[in-house]
Amino acid sequence: MAIRIDRVTRAFGETVALSEISLTIPDGQFVSLVGPSGCGKSTLLAIIAGLDPATTGRVEVGSTPGVVFQEPALFPWRNIRDNVAFGPEMQGVKKAERYSRADAALRMVHLTRFAHAFPHQLSGGMRQRAAIARALVSDPAVLLMDEPFAALDAQTRTLLQAELLTVWERTRKTVVFVTHALDEALYLSDRIILMSARPGRVLADLTVDAPRPRDPQADPALASLRAHLLALLSAEVEALARAEHDGDWQGLARPAPPATANIGAEI
Amino acid sequence: MSSSTLRPTLDRSIPLLRIGFYLLLFALWWGLAAWGVWPPYLLPSPPEVGGFLLDSLKDGTLLPAVLTSLVRVGTGYLISLVIGTGLGLLLARVRLLDETVGTTIIGLQSLPSICWFPLALLWFGLNENAVLFVVVMGALFAVTLAVRAGVRNLPPLTLRAARMLGATGFRLWWYVLLPAILPAYLAGMRQGWAFAWRSLMSAELLSQSLRTGVGHLLTTGRDLNDMAMVLGMIGVILAIGLLVERAVFFPLERIVARRWGTEGA
Image (cartoon, rainbow over all chains, first blue to last red; front, top):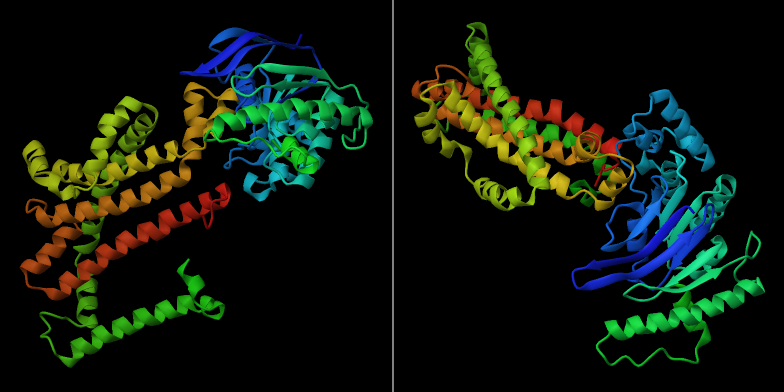
C-alpha cells in the first residue's frame, strides 16, 4: 500500500472539514479526489502531504511525497534548473548529482531547453510543468497534485493532462489528484473518489477501467460513469447551495439538461 | 508611468527635455545673479559658487569633510541594516512581537529622527556616538518595516512549497525568505539610505561640537555669511545623496527586478 488513510477527521474550530475518511491506495494507482467546492479534498491532500495535521485519525505514507500545487510556486530568483534542484539541495545532495537529477526530471516534462530560463520568462503551462519536474526530482513514490491544471487555459490543460499520463505510465507513481472537473478525473484516473459537501465524507469510490487514451465524451462506459457521478454530484451541489443561499433556494431548474450538465461538470 | 501620457515620439527625447530644463534653470539663476536684483551676498552667481568649490578642493577642506560624513553615514547605515533586518524578520514571524514592538515602530516612524538628538546628547555626550545614534534611528525603521512587509506579503504557497521540499529552520530563512524579499528589501534599503543621509545632515547642522563634515561646512558658510559656500555645500550634499542612489541602488534594483520578473510592476 502506498497510502493508508485511517478514519481521518479534520476540524477548524467548529467547522468539520473532513469526517472519518478511510482510504487505502495501492502502489501505482492514479486516484482522483472529486467533490463540490469546500468538500475538503484539498485539505485531505494537505494532510497526506504532511502540511496540515489531522484532528483525529492516521495517515501512513511511505516516504515524503512530491507535491504540485494549483500555482507553480516556483522561486522567481532561481532559474528553472535550480528550482527543480532545490529539493535535493535541501537534502544535501552534491551539486553534480542534483543537477543530473534535475536534468532528468526536466527531460521528463520536455523543458530541457528552458533549464536556464527564469520562471517569469515561461508561460503558465511551462511553469506548471517545471513544478511537476520539481515534484518528481527526488523520485518520490507518491505524487500529490492539488488542482494542478485549474488555473490554465483549456488547450494547455489538455496538453498537460496528456503529458502527465505519459509521465505516470513511464514512472508508475502513485498519484492522488484533486480536481473539481469530472472530465479531467475520467480522462486520467484508475479510480475516482467522490466526496460529499462539508463535512467531507467519501460518497462514492469508483473504479475506472476503460483503456487509455480515453475520450470521456465518446466512450459509452465512461459516459454512463460520468452520468452516475454527475447525479451524485448535483445532489451534493444542491445541498451546498441550500446551505449557502439565503434560505429561499428553489432548486436547479430541472428539465434543462445542457445547463445542468455544464454546472455539474464544472463544479 | 507618467511618460505614457506623452506622445511616443516625445518618449525618446525626454532625457534631452530634462537636460534642457536643468540648463534653463541654471541660465535663470545666472541671469538673476547677473541682473543684480539681489545683492551677491544673498544670491551669488554660478562662477562664485564654482570658485568656492574649487578653492575648498584645493585647500583641502572639502574632501576630508565629505569623507568624514560618508564614514558617519556609512557606519550608521550599516548598523541600521543589521539591526533592521533581524528585527524585521522577527516581527514578521513572531506575532506577539509584532503586536507590541511592531506597532510601536510604525508609530515611531513618523517621528523625525533628529528629535532623538537631545536624548542622544544626554546619553552619549557631545560626540560621534550621538550623531551615529540619530543616523541609526533615521534608517532603522524604514529597513525594519520593509523586511517585515516583504516577509508578510510572500505568497503562502511559496512557503508551503519550500517546506514541502525540505527547507526548514535556518534553511527556510536563508534559501527562501531572504531571497524572496529581496525586491522589497532593496526598496527599504534605498529609503533607509535617504533617511540616514538626511538624519546625518540634521545632526551635523545642529551639533556645534562636530568640527567637520559637509553639514558642518554648510553651517560654517552661514556663520561666515558666505552664500557661495552655503549654496556650494547644498550642491555637494544633494550630489552625494543622489549619486549613491543612482550609482548603488538603481542598478541593484534593476538587476533584481529583471531577475525576479517584477520589472514594471
